[in-house]
Length: 370
Image (cartoon, rainbow, N blue to C red; front, side, top):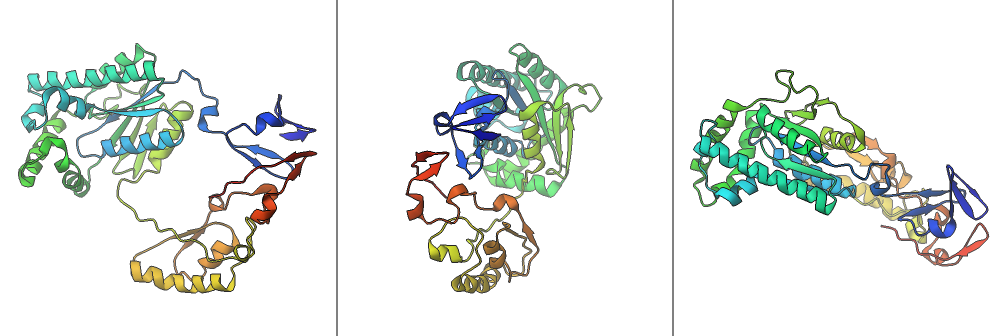
């Protein structure tokens, strides 16, 4: 990419500068204009439709994973929606269904649960067609080959790709924690004694275990696209992953943690540029900034005690100096560096407000910084 006269050439595409300034975000540098576009501009087929179908026994974190993936894709500007079959089941057949409702030998219960799944599938397809959705997350146990085959056949009619996401967990402590933290507060057990609710839910799990068939267990689903998360992501198995969006989903799943983690943020100490009112740069700490760096270890110890901690900093001097006295493992990340201010680097806000000469054209603009 290079600038020629008053135009910018991207491969063989020539755009006038007036068009460049109308694009979502542009960072202006002395020698080059770098364009940052949202994922909507990524070269993807506009007709792409993906159904991410959750698979797994109850209390394995499926709904948590579904919500997290949805939030991540929406952050990437990908139109995404979760369809929770449990909500459809409660709407059609009411909450407070006891564990016998989920017994695989209960034909009436099986029929009711299939009805709820079909209603969710219909709404999902309607969303794809009428609201131009891109990724739908079908949140249910989908724990048998028969159910998964039904979903595949239904989606094929509408040219919807299917990607299964299975969560497998053998850690009883995690399962119990999920039951106590999440399941007992669900509408199914509202106003019910916690001990009786826990007992009923364990019986429900047993019913699902009786009929549960993990993905590709008999090598008869080897042509399915899927990702298996085993024991909270300690092991991840993938199969037939294709395309940009499926790859992004797998990348996120491989970095997803179900257990809670604490992240503490600290501003770097006052820098010399802060005193001078300048932005950007790579200046060192001011005397007050060094005092802050000295006080920071005691502040952290008072709140965390002897708990283990890893300190992340950018590669800039002011953050490295701020963390200098912290007796913990440290990692420097270029991705944490302040956004490049381009031609405004090292300037005060007053200087930024003047007209900047760019390729012979006077351009007046405001620079917004976080």
